[in-house]
Amino acid sequence: MQVVKVPGKDKRHKVFLYALSTCAWCKKTKKFLEDRGIEFEYIDVDRCSKEDVAAIKSELERRGAPMSFPLIIIDDKVEILGFKEDELKEALGV
Amino acid sequence: MTNLDSARRRAESDAKSRGYFLNPDESFLKDLLEGLVENERRYGYPSCPCRIATGEFRLDRDIICPCDYRDADVEEYGACYCALYVRRDVFEGKAPLRPVPERRPAKRQAAAVSYASGAIASESGGSKDKADVDKAEKGNALGGGEPGMKLWYCKQCGYVAFRDEPPYVCPICKAKKEMFGEVKLGLVG
Ligand code: SF4
Ligand SMILES: [Zn+2]
Image 1: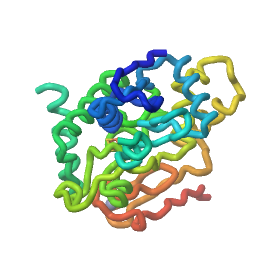
Image 2 (image 1 turned 45 degrees about the vertical axis):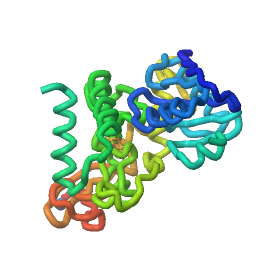
Image 3 (image 1 turned 60 degrees about the vertical axis):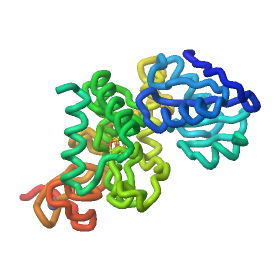
């Protein structure tokens, strides 16, 4: 799977982002994290192979999360659907 | 004219015809237009940049920009799901731009994701995935016999549409959903 790691100084949380490369809200989310120096990993689901989409689908089904983007998962437990700045700030403590 | 320019023009004239505006944030707008151009290059039609598409027209039909959900979302939330199209008050900064919840029915979304994951191409006949796609597919085939599909006509201008629900707004005369009636067909004789 083409998971991209974006290094950052702030490593307090494990941040994983499901995104689409064409989606402007997803770009905003990536930029939000980058601007604050938060380390995170992301995957652009529209660039994935069928096999990878299948794996992502079952992972999200397991979590009970919908396949909508951006989906941000923090420390494996907090799920934020959509670019919600306030919720992100609170969950990441920034 | 570049593809980006033509995507922009198309969106501009569409916004104008509806009394909507394009997102005033120039770089955000450019990201969305680029997304549309990229999807058109990939699939042959400009499917929604913020939703997962399959490249199968019958599964993506409802999310080709402007999507079936735009008018209801602009009306209710002040913006379409991607925030490409916005209402006047949002454009003027008098109302906030908030994330718009997904209005696309879960069953259509599930069908698209199943297809994109290859669940259909693989030998999984009879699985839940396959059933999802079959269901979504039937909803599109003219005369496919799905009970949910009906013919609707605009009582104001006579426009006719074949779909599960009447359009939110008549694309011809802008009459509201309530102005649509169902066409009942019967055999004579
Ligand atoms: S949500 Fe907006 S940008 Fe996306 S397809 Fe619908 S109208 Fe187009
Ligand atoms: Zn009409």
